[in-house]
Image 1 (cartoon, rainbow, N blue to C red):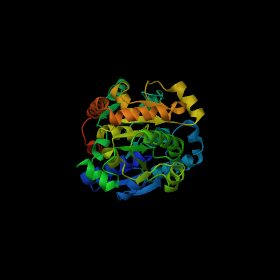
Image 2: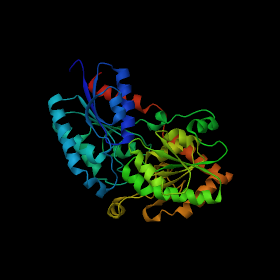
Image 3: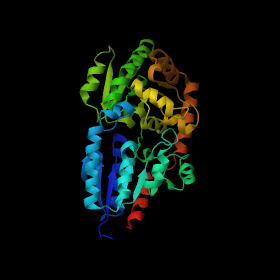
Image 4: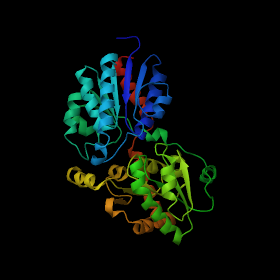
Length: 379
């Protein structure tokens, strides 16, 4: 064993970049001699890990959306295979991004490189055959949802439930009025937050209907509207879309948690942001839309009743979901009006969200995964 074990960490979207950056920090704090190499985004690069490749803006959702990126994915796979062949890291850690990472795990096993998969594919929803691939190519998995360990144990895969990493990264405190003031939001109006996602195609498909909904509600009630602009999406995308609506809108960049914390309700693109809202106790409506072909394919392979992770963790629909052609601004505006101004409904939703937060485990996922990883490399 080298005196300086090498770990390669690979992810492919904004949330994975966040969780990867925290994991790198935890590894380096526990074992400074370990050399960490990263293929991710700007947050992972900022930790000081040696960048092998950049996956900025590579995250895509939907089957047809992936097709346009295949040449880039092929080049990245080739680059990472060459790196593993030359450097022979003692461990590969893959974070989420299963369409790419599962193939990379297979390449690592061919080279005799152990694999730890953190934030595993959603095999309980679709792609159940993937668990067979994981059984062949992954040594250990670190899962973030309480219902996942049993799935992997049944297949003989070594699994640890580490809790959800958002519990350690979503931390906002203080008086909400002060947070609103810091964000430049009016203190005397309820705030509706719009979170259209971290990918350009999500923003283009979802933000117009979110703004239509906000405009309808603003015609009935006095509210403030704010859009969370993901750093991974160019500013001009938000400017171009919001300019089409005669509605005062604050565009806030890189402050998801602070905006959700200070908001009375939110419209949230299905994804990790729904869990962020749950952790902060913000009532929400979940929306999502992909290409028609992707929706058609998904309808034949997805085997769950709900799309939003909040509802999946709860095991029932505790917040509304509006998907694809069913996204209806008028109906959503009524849902939001009740969430903001009907105190009884609001209390029920907030209580149910607290139950979801409790089910996600305890904070400290990054340190737990770091300990597993260091045990695998003997440090």
